[in-house]
Length: 180
Image 1 (cartoon, helix red, strand yellow):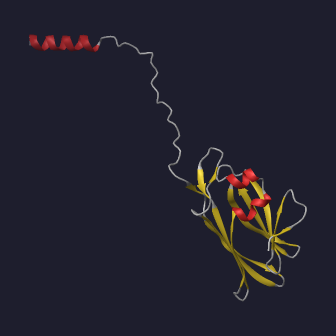
Image 2 (image 1 turned 90 degrees about the vertical axis):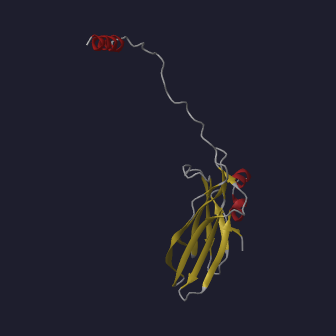
Image 3 (image 1 turned 45 degrees about the vertical axis):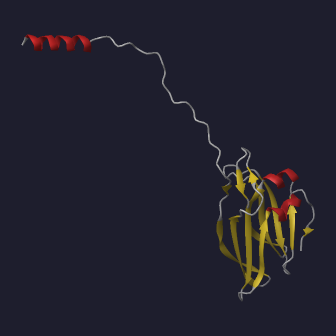
């Protein structure tokens, strides 16, 4: 019994001992954001085909955007590298025959943007806009590949005439530059 009393007394004394309060603040050190080990890909996808009435007939417009590892790399403001896109435009007539079948890259639009932009940014947007002045009108964007930088781009307009000829307008141009 004496032994048990000594054990309880020892336990009581050690458990009531004042703890030393630490003034140290424990936190995690911020980790550096790691750069990707290789090039990233921009968003790929197919815009749902759209049928438009033009020149008294219906035309079906299909647009597919894909990263292409064979094209020169582009980069965002942080220096992250991305594979540039290529865009395939297919326009078919109501009878199913092909009107336009062309693949576009940033190089097709480089003469319409500043040389620095043409070198670093990629082909980030390509959408059908409307029919205006007898031409199919497409909105093109050469911009930062970073999806969070959605307002960093140069807008261009691609026009396709009734013979399949194309011209490109930039906001700084007053007239068309014929391509084909």
